[in-house]
Image 1: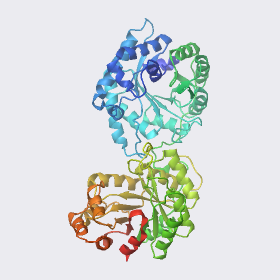
Image 2: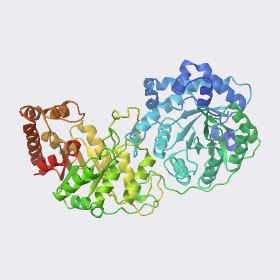
Image 3: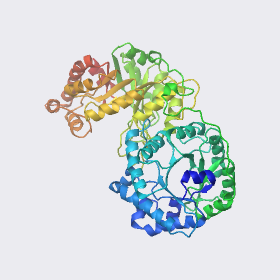
Image 4: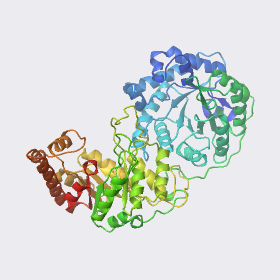
Length: 615
């Protein structure tokens, strides 16, 4: 057989279609691990390969799209990465070798995304992602694949990690395929004119598109890619958009329709054409018949677009961010080194904000600098934190909007932030959000598309006038971005995450409630080089039960036994409340010289307790 790239330069090659669609059609439910069928039912997988080969496929993909440690772990198969991938490659090769005499097909080692966000949007580091991809790539290479097919990636950084992983273990060709919306931008908003040349710069041999859209919108995006790269192109569209037919998602693009677009893809410069979700051997048969006789020959100009890995300030369209002291009065006080006081006022149940707004007014009248509106409460129907923060700002009181990633996807977060800025909010405290039973709605789900590190990166890009895809948004936002830290958690892990947050653009840090002064001192030693203001959290106990709960049932909180004993010795509710305030005042007095501010936490927004602590 000729090397894959040599064959691609001489002929249009046809890739196979959907593996998952075919397995599902054979009765395998979607809650199964399709990749494990290589071990448990190899005849079924081999039959799918054979059907595509008989249909005329020049390239067949291994049944390994999700065969990485991260995804296999969900099925209890995380320790069988090498076994599954090597077996899948051997199975595809055996199917290829058993095909009728004629030109032999190439076996592509399929690698899909990890299913989690990588930096800068998620907590999985690019180096960690690369290690996971490398493990899979090594196994596929050992299994004897002819090339690698990296497909259905939405995030250029994750794709970059996958390319680097393959290149670390093999010199075989890499087909790198992103997935896009109908507008031709990646699912995170990056245009084809940017990600296509970046893929080439990272080491892809062939660049292209697959999944998400049907042939018509994909053709338009391919034409845009052809204008900016000179490497071979690939296209594997879905068989249209799925439609709900009696409870089943069905793809309704006919084989002859797909074949008509295959010819158009080739005319636009595509050298490798096939299908993705919903496509079958019949689709591939007609695609093969349509393109086999077409002559190659395309002229494209070289790319010149900088990569997404370029530092934000150096990216095209990036604008200089607003100086910190000019972002908000709160930001100015921190920039000037002044000690700030902050108190939480949680959103109320229902839609009546009167009591919460009145609490904010009272705090402002007593000289509290900032009112934090937490985004944490989930029980029952509550006013949104963003709405209450806007109402508080309307009273001339400076709010700090706590914003949780838990319930939003990345695009929703971007829209929320732009809306918050348009409504006048400037101070944002980004948190990942807790996993918990969801109050009165136990079937509700969390999202966690990104974590607080990713959120901080989003804010930083907006502050440079860029969206998450690197495109201009007009004037840059002027957010003053903060994050939370927990001095009582595993210190090395907490400092590592805090370093990432500061690197992403965090400008201040608020800690979880601190009850252990010595532990806070150890934390401060670890953050000496971070050069960000640290605002310490203080929480007065209400009674002994509250102290015991914080000491025993709240993850990541350390309460010294001596403080719990002091609370137990109180002989009345009034005495317990007074003792809780006394402990909080003592802690604040000890912590104040080490911090640049204090945030007072209270149960249910009882601001009287905050007044007692602040004195």
